[in-house]
Image 1 (cartoon, rainbow, N blue to C red):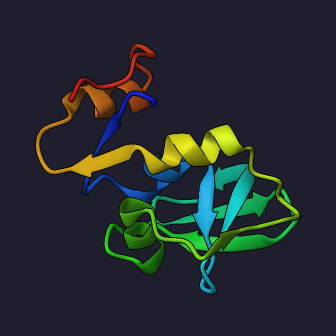
Image 2: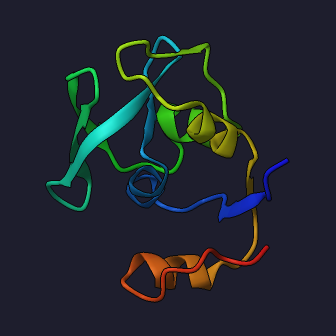
Length: 117
């Protein structure tokens, strides 16, 4: 069994998506992200491995943010070919409340270690 990975529960959506490189569609299909470009503080442009392009909004309470935090998905995209190890790593990820200054520091260009839980 893999070690649990802890992430803060209420981090901005862009930081979460940049880290895990997965995106849940409205239909419950989990896509792998090929490119992620932040266009402004509130919008980003995402291209999936199956070449779907979308503009996403940075919201902690959005449909996608809730689905990512709760690890909900109906199935994975067959065209994106998300590796099994990535799905397993995603499934053991834990989102919890609390202070995670090391995660925010890491995202802003600090050291590359994972936050302690």
